[in-house]
Length: 422
Ligand SMILES: [Zn+2]
Image (cartoon, rainbow, N blue to C red; front, side, top):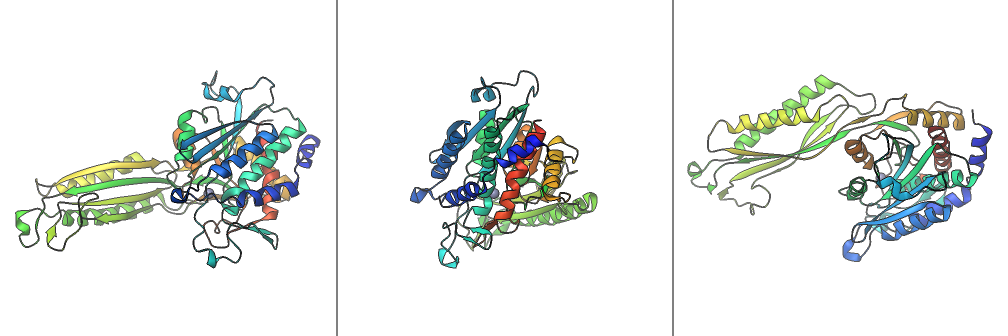
């Protein structure tokens, strides 16, 4: 049931303004093209200006030149200062902080002639806004803005604060959210809604990822005299066969997750010579072979144990010849996420969805990695990924977002925030 107070907040959402925002933000191309001097800065300035208009306190921080994060905060108490968020919480989570998270970068538009309309025109047709970034994820960011604005305008008292993080480089190395976390902006956050396009489904599970770099080192030699060296490629081939068997065992052991399917271990880079060790040549037996494993994890898998297992396999492959050596590096590890359905942030979004649509929420999972993975991995923050936009359309030509989903998302965010911070 939507209360009178909640109704008052929902009435403060101005759909025409919201749709105009999505168009305006989509029209600012924020593809990272440093050679052309283009990045997220203009889009981030737009977000910060709108946050200030709404009455939020903001900070604008460059992660690297041309690539800023916007941090914006709101709390009902008049003496609140955004700098408080950089001081350690007085007692663990003395006050609830709900974060809305989004990224300002978009992927390349590709060949513009493949598009029906110019990629950054943000035209409206058939109840959709078309444009690169409209779906992933400028609509979601604008919905968070609209929800926060409605809450601020209505003057409702919240038992906690709202933080908006609009960060750079989600589509690349995620330097934006990493910087945000390192600065301390996430330290007070008790729950986060990641506003990525999920058709307003409640994605409570997310695959983890681990990248392992494995190098086997032999002895380089002339291809005509291989016995004067030690070939690293045969032990690498044995290693890859063992990796495939390990993947099969992991699948059998952990089965299919209801939202995420089965885990995977994929060699994505296999090369010899190893990286940085010169050009391959037909008559040279290289001194080393290297591979990178892209491991996608589902809840229940232990990344540390898996990494140890892979290293043991690598060690076994070089044990056949005492001139062989190996090197092993965990390049990145982000644990899988599963936020329980009875967690207050999930409950708040679920009841909001039901009250607004008259139907139960649809739960789901995120197969890839998002900024939310970093927030969870580094700070243990409970995450729900939920936002407007078709799940399969990000990064496509003629990217679009449904206006009906935009309107619903803004209302879900406003209600969820009020209920979570009620
Ligand atoms: Zn995205």
